[in-house]
Image 1 (cartoon, one colour):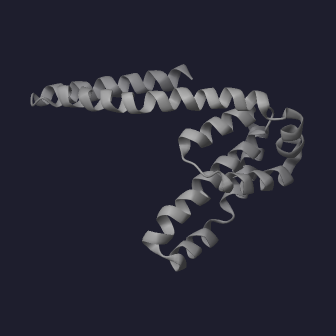
Image 2 (cartoon, rainbow, N blue to C red; image 1 turned 30 degrees about the vertical axis):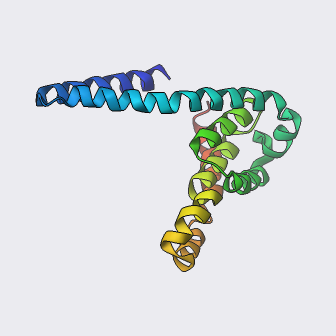
Length: 166
C-alpha cells in the first residue's frame, strides 16, 4: 500500500514542478482547486469510512461468509454480480460497502465480481444518465454486451488467487 501512496506523492510533486516551470500562476491555481476539492471530499470520506466501520460491525458475518465467502464458488460470484448492480450509489458508498463485506468474510473473487458489476451496471447511473442521454436501445445493447463481465471477472480472479494468493 505504501508504494501506491508514494507514487501519488511523486506524481503530485512532478505536477507541481511542471506547473512551477510555467510561471503563470498555475501552482497557486492548482493549490486553490486542490483545497476546494479537499473541503468537498473530506467530510464525505470521513462519513464513508465511518459507514464502512459500522457496516462491518452490523453485517452478519456468518451470512456473508455463507453466501459470498471464498467457499461459495460460482454461486457466490453470481450473487455478488447481482448485488453489485443493485448498489444505488457512487464510489463514495460502493467502496465502503465493499470494504465492509471484505472485512466480514467475502471472498476475493466474489468481491471482484461485486465491484465489476457495480462499475458496469450501476442501476442509478443507468436510470439517471445512460437511458436519458443514450436511449433505451443503446443501453440495452450495452448491458447485453456486458452481461458476462462480472461473472467472468470473478472466475478469472478465482484462478488468479490460486496462482498468486493474497
